[in-house]
Length: 254
Image (cartoon, rainbow, N blue to C red; front, side, top):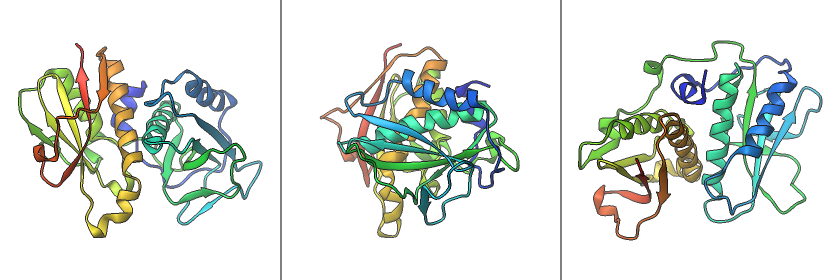
């Protein structure tokens, strides 16, 4: 299974076997991080693996799943650091899926010890061997359709559709799916649905969610051999999609 294939079958795992994974898998996580180019390379970040089989009590938080391992991401508290962290964590999540290891983002999780290097804790991700099924069928994913997520200004190229499908399948906090897309032949303008008062908790993780979604987009782009740029354009306004905030644009070079 490739990272791209994992996009279509990954599911959030709620129950883990309290058993170790292989050292090769743990090493593979750190190798992936070392080789990865984050969304914002100027933002320093760190990924720690918390082994709860050998040392308990390092993680906490409301509704945190019991798991043999957690991935903790820390970052410099700079603009877009949440998005950067989401991008990194989603690619690790897809990697673990390809190795038969389940994952679940822990939005309410926290580390009980503060980092000593000035980094800020961002997110926990539980991982381990699942008690039940690791993967799901694509049709089982409770996601909005592309017709509900997109406004089509032009007929998109085939590879644009493939990247939009990868974006559509991205997980998000509370399954909020905040992204909306204005689609042209070779570019996509990405917007965030403005949260309502009752959705304020969902908005807390908004930029992290977008990082996760962009992680899927970049994996898809690499799979279909398309180069793209992520930029913010000054001439795009909220008028393209009412009640939405402009985030960035995806420009395809191919």
